[in-house]
Image (cartoon, rainbow, N blue to C red):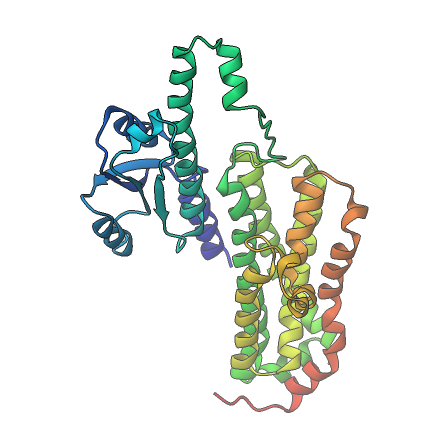
Length: 362
């Protein structure tokens, strides 16, 4: 309940502590081998995310290096590229990158595209300058439209902010699901279910409240420790304010415990309820919408995404904490989390019957 959530928190946040992957290995196949092509290679190596680690004599060897996971991408500069650039004959410069790793592939695609553009721009600038064209006209000719890019709430493109804010809570929800179902199931496993109910005078609500309340306090302390660490220490953006963070933590813990109790009530078996909780928690990472947008999924999957507490946590966090919009804009997702917290009301009678009559089967 304490050690593993904290380990997960420090593991993910430290693994992506740099914010953006840096010095990812890239190869070069330079068949031209001129001062211009070598300058392109040096510029590629100067990028923060790219590091030229090898030069290959042929495209085939560079491709095999990608397949052996020695490099993520390579730049191919064919023979005669410089001569064609100077003659304005648009030489083809190719680059190949692996999308087996989405973050690495996207970042290196950006770097390689920029290098290809810079190659033609540098030659064009030199040619126009030699003809006596003023620098202002050269800049306007080479870049007629200047893109003014603003990344809202995360201008640093920090992947730690993007990913840890959903991965760590998702794993914490997994632990809460499992421990909640396990705690109730062990009463059957060790034959103490009738004594447990007798201590509550046969009231299943009192029995569950007495069992869950200490865990709620522990989980709240762990979740709030995570939120203090990422928002207070690491400085993740949170224009929504502290009160919304605290409220989101509370409703998330209660919703996760409610789902764990509900899963056991549907299948009053230690093994089956924990299996359902594990499956639901793992699927939550795909259905939350952080890696792949839910609006881009098929219609049945979009409808299914509403059944995962992590999806609603992510939407409330994104709308009210990360972007600072009003709680009213996320009211449906807040209501869904409250609904998950109230799910045990549907299975109270079944859980009480299981505690009194079921026999544990390993």
